[in-house]
Image 1 (cartoon, helix red, strand yellow):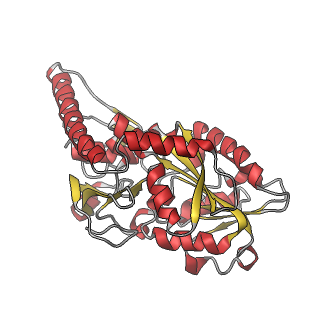
Image 2 (tube, helix red, strand yellow; image 1 turned 45 degrees about the vertical axis):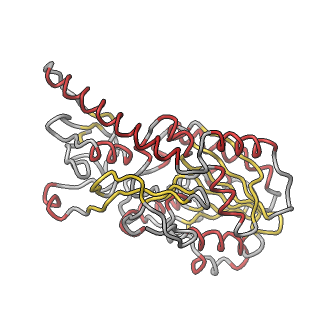
Image 3 (spheres, helix red, strand yellow; image 1 turned 180 degrees about the vertical axis):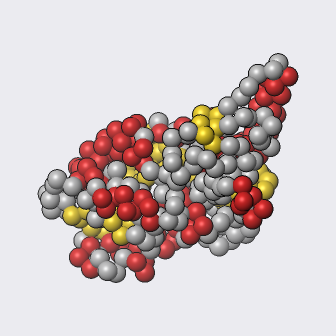
Length: 355
């Protein structure tokens, strides 16, 4: 197993077993051809980075029928409106703004009625089309060095690049950072938020670990990774989304002041062993306890003659159901409002999805 940033050998410390594509909701006729991979996780102590060993290709995960629209959640619409307000301090009246993984345009929609020249990169065809319907300028491709050169006006001239729950999806993080470097102005800022390693370990929320989440970041790992590329961490803003996330604010070294919270959170992470393998070993033990407790709880409820159904067919549930081997014999159905999922079956364990 190789560290995806340093290309050095690291050992997996845990496996969650065979796992399907987390958003790969399927019909009965596709059961036999369903794709599986080994969900093993490792940790590079050199850059304090938690990562998957293997994963499907980005094209397998983010395709023309990606079954997730940010705008389907009222909470997320409010969250992104607040996110947009918070980043305006880094913008001038005529600034250029790029969002990586812009989905259906929920975040960038907040800038339509301004002089900000904003554009999104979104590889999933269906969500990119939805964004364009809202009037959000969208490039239907992956954000990468080779795909930014049609944006000649943005090169060395972009004041802000944003992302949310997307940087952890990108296998070639080196290419992404180099593309960011080519686009940002001298004092430009790169801001993104992702599920936070500290929250995942504290809550034993191993459902954060699935094919799309190639990395689970901490402030320590972000500082170490971006230091390689002459960027520094200038601010950290904890978020409640996804069970606990962190918003990272980065700029070129010595171009902006560093908020005092950065030092505090880095010190806290050291106390939590987020910079070394010990926290991972503890997490592994806690996952095994959680798995056994959940299976016993379901077994007890079924013994008592209870019926169990699922609320919302989420990508995160794919890890829980497959790791714990919970299938249609235990859960009768899962309810969801997403039309792309209704009438299909959950990945791997094949529980029916109903309206």
